Image (spheres, rainbow, N blue to C red):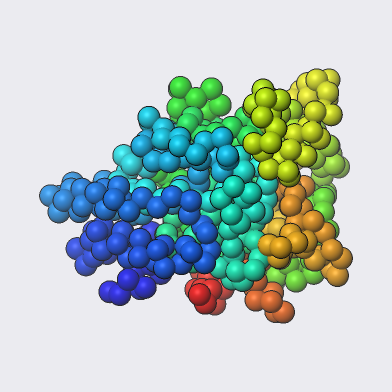
Length: 472
């Protein structure tokens, strides 16, 4: 196979071909390294590329598989990693000016698990400064570009991971999500991204943003691949105080069961932001396709929905400030101007607001579980707007200019607040610009498999959407 063909394959397809001996991990890794070298100057999706380390790991994987010791579907698969996740001996900048020579002495727990599954770390993906901005317009390492239109943002803060996947520079990548930083880039770059149930994946070794809202999430080009990548990381970590001890199912077990018989909810009360018309239209089309596939879809109200975003913001601000307070007081100029402004705004949050929000969250989470207990998932738009221009970061929503940075948080942030899993799946491309659009499939805690089942059913019914690639 040509290197271009190899880079277009899914994790699942690569794994099958590696298992059969048709291709080797070395071929796969070399093909992706060559594509990164070719496209990264244009996209700036990677801060660090692990040429030597990846080739050494690929040769080891090749020998191990040849000896009959295959570890599973991730063995020999190159993975990109957001640059706030520790990787042993590999530069980890946090997207910040403060860590120009930070070479961690150990892997983050999620990386350790992926390596145990045989995955190959191919590089560190560009991120917003300290993963704290939703355009990946990094003041220290440069803006990341969207492969569908390099003059536009890939969203953020996991924008490098989203850009790299859409450009077929990697078949899988890791992001983090505190208010939508996996699902935003997935929606804007036309890929698949999951914010799992809170505590499903260990965050030990991941630079904190807001500790009670932080998640690591898999990002891929297909729903099945997303499930496979989650499988490689999920599980309780007793050394992570935020990890939750919950059963880890086979996330692919029911993925082919289809949408027939599933009960899905539409909840306009959870859409606390204006949605651009093409995105809303694409969601309506997706809903009709799922209905045709046999899903029962109903509109449900949620009278307490407005409380969720009301209480989410104090938690996000107070916990973010707690991480940066001392450093910011000592070295404010080490932060970009946008982050300085965010930290100044965060100072306005009072202790009373934070405590009230933390307490009310417990009640709201129980209320949400009870309210949607009879449904398999909730369907929401993936993002309010199309990708904005890098230069201005001004989005257009129904003819009105809006700041893209932070625009999606009221749509994606509620899932961080209550800890529910949310899967972003592409729904098509807008007719004027050809830019990706998406829907979000939200499940109850621990029920990622149901989200995958819905997303996979839609994906299989719309190959014209999911087989399309940007022209670079």
